Length: 367
Image (tube, rainbow, N blue to C red; front, side, top):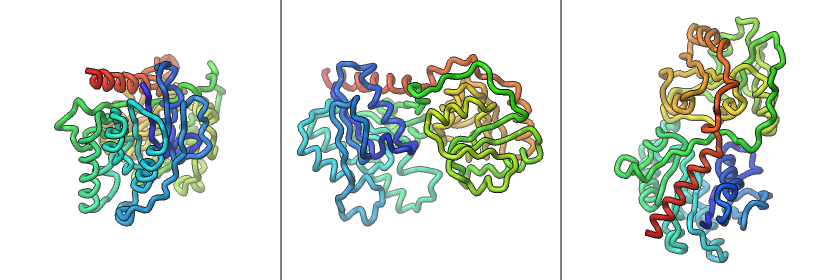
């Protein structure tokens, strides 16, 4: 099997969008030793020691359509074509990850040039994303392209079932679609202490950015009145946390250090708008460090992709109001997660599923 990964973002780019494919490419040969692995990305300074070949391709083309569609993948697609025409590689499988998404238009070119099986990885919904207030015209344009992308692809994957159901073609051809969750990076885990340091407070931790539709305001105003509850924040400074006596700000940290700090806290905090498709990679970082999880939702409790992600893991849900949060905190303080088997939540488990999917496609090709 010769696998070409195409991802606009890749490590050492620190954004979340770089993590998923970076893990797959880096560890692919551990579980498929006879395979060759290639990469196309716009990211510079990639560690290519685990790759057969790496191509850094910048988006420099200026197609006319780019004046209407701002997705960076539209320009990038043209540059990738030009580069591949010059390179002598012959992948049997191509995995293209978004976002951006418009490079998914490469599918017919890749199939014609290499007779390759092409898998599209939607980390987020594209045409129909309830989180974005897109105009009807914009949705229709995106849907037009998504229909073409998905029709031409051999397989389509996403991070949860709800995202899959938002994609064109799912209802007509469900067997073409598969879920591969994000998972935690099992290759970067710090050594966990068997005993946590004793603290005067019960500490929640939140790793990441706060958004308007997932605001921590009610949670913060609730714990402000509790003497022994604190929120540790890892990430960029947030206006929501200014002047709060209950917040311990730790700033941006490298991934291993972030995990180490998570492991020392008492519970991980998730704040969700309640949209069924919504999921977050920070869940897996909390799971990796075996701390209970507190989910505050503006929707219904125990529903959606987050509830699916947390099946079998110690967690408490609360509606986004003061009384529910207070009751939830009380329940949470008696939970433990240190004895939970977390292997199924790892990126390793997701990679093994991807390899199985590629092998299925290969067998279909041979037949």
